[in-house]
Image 1 (cartoon, rainbow, N blue to C red):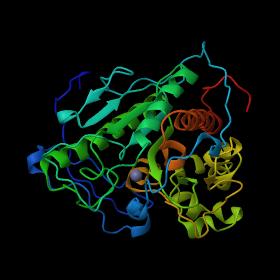
Image 2 (image 1 turned 45 degrees about the vertical axis):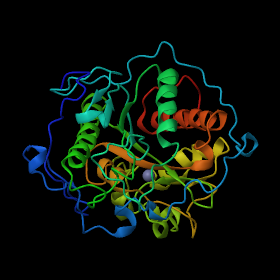
Image 3 (image 1 turned 135 degrees about the vertical axis):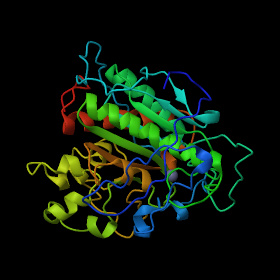
Image 4 (image 1 turned 30 degrees about the vertical axis):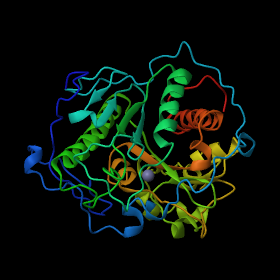
Length: 376
Ligand SMILES: [Zn+2]
């Protein structure tokens, strides 16, 4: 696909099916079809409700005033910028990858955007869009959007560029969530409409393209799906594919092969020398690194499991695009409490800056890419 081909339709793929087996990829690319011929792509009735839907039906956005700055504990985080970093990813580019780093491609009608990168980091933003295309009716039962998630992702994208001298991949759904929910497998809203079906396929095709590049060029990497939560615990929830009951188990139990296979970190955890519990809630986990910066987060050393608190274990995107079903790209669903990112200005700016440093540290530590010029 040529760069900057706005309004050119992406090649549309067939419907996906997601089957909860630890041994198989959930989907194979079906023969390509025109969007008009497609059935609604998403359906996966065999998965348990708790973690196949993104579980955000009970999320409560925006019932409180924005917090003032004093409520945010995040400290300024000074990290030296790497200005003479070598190329992070050394492998050959995959065949047919015709994207230019940092130059956006758009799907049909500009609803879905792909910013190609050169880092082993992929950011997905399914629920932060602002567009209201009139062809797609508004679903009154859906939240309008995950407020702040796109804004935070854009800051993280920019900060990662400045911190590492390289560019993450980013895929954005620009349509409001109540017209196009791209973290679902069922048929609403609008998933009987060709525009919605096409946009759905474009989003996942772009993520797959980013994964293809990372797999070929970097060997392995991590997909981060950005969301906003409104749970009363006011914490960031890192979804890694384990239920609250599974997270309630001991560290020893998390090391078992069965839970390693279920994890969205399955590729990383396939190395028996790697502690699965450490990956998920140790000091160098995403939760551990955020907690060190003063963020309230689960799972983490301080909050190893959510208990009865609000928690999303990971939705469709993080499940589909992580390593549970194979491959070398792991994934995390980042459900950021809105108090960190909803308000404009320094709160969102500072949290997003912290998150970008944490993502870089996490990827550097666990995958061995030299991203930051700092001691851990
Ligand atoms: Zn969401």
